Image (cartoon, rainbow, N blue to C red):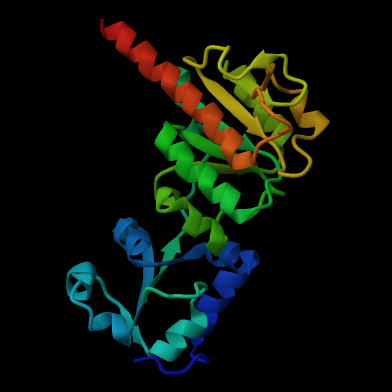
Length: 265
């Protein structure tokens, strides 16, 4: 049993939780909780740590069956946990690697492209909502918050394991490449004259979502094939970035489900 927070493994967990550079260097990220452990692909797991109290719970044996793990004293486990009420299980997971081509599925391509989103909860919610809406991947620029930030990971609720992602050094070049591949790019923008449910999203499409406070940069917005807007009632000027993304992704999902049904009739 590990009983000291100065144990090298515990110090490494703390470093991985707090430092994006350390996560990138090691190619590892930290996940906490039973759901995140249960849904993690077994081949991605690089370390499993459980508190002594967790081992006494009825479900522990079944959940841990076939997995190697280290036992950590309750006090030390609390000290390395990033949550206020730890569930007693923490895992180190290998970061998956995807190329841009992994996100592209021809006419079925459905992408979310985010520029400089800063809130970990927003990014994680976008990924989770994107999985529900059937996106084929998410593209982020370098100034977007780290996808593997513990708060982002928690917000994905497991979608981090299933939604391909691509972090680009050159957002402009990446968008231009998508357009060369006949993927229509839409910018959610206040200058949009077309409402978001007017265009057809049944072919390859991508939605651009900008920073929470400033929106898209002019340079990025100008790359869009079309500006679209979400109509507002009352005195509301704009919506939360994750909510806006959800509306767009689910509109594409709705159209594709309807189109698929009509093709079967």
